[in-house]
Length: 282
Image (tube, rainbow, N blue to C red):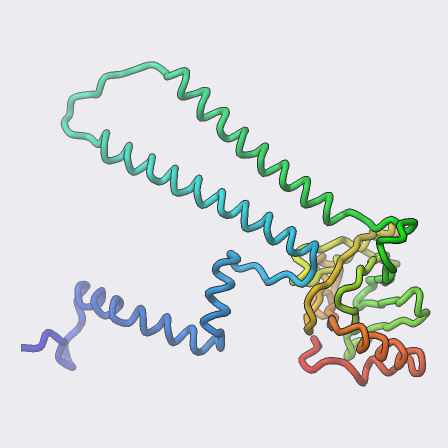
């Protein structure tokens, strides 16, 4: 006879659990299909612990640090779980008789005090190396460094302005027209950030780091972009009423496309609106 419940029968606890077990994989697969995610993208994102794929040399450095830190956390977590399970099973209660009471074990206490300090020191060391690399600026007097593209970033309530310093052109976002930033792949870009009102934060998730835009102070950092594509940038600092709409688009293009784009801007400052990529934030 079939064990499935009749139409008028109410499911008991065991039936509900069996139904949930059967439906679990089906619902998981349906969720994946509905989300529109490619299985390969999900797999690669899982390997990166969910962080975006970096599009700059500096971002790759942060990416490697992040994965290394998470790998260390996984190793420590597994080791501690094994120790906890071992202690729970090996020394579980077998009778009402109290176990032999012992005093502290000095070597073990020294060990579990020293090991965390070693782990922290190693993580701190690699974090400082990565931080120094990300904050390093090109020496303008070094002929081997190549030409640095300077971009002035102005964050204001509630939009962005991008100044192409050497080219003497700028792009300013409007309420219904987010600013567009176009950069060439393979070039070192120096961002000089400022704000006339409150603190903002310049953030493109694929950069894997963000930098505050502070009134009365110029924050400077450099990136060497190594991947073409279209990306969304945001303000990551709560800056007022329309903070949620303070987005911009980033296009990383070839050197030839970049030169053509700048020539178009110099001929017509409104040309950037015509070349805005599909799917720009609104």
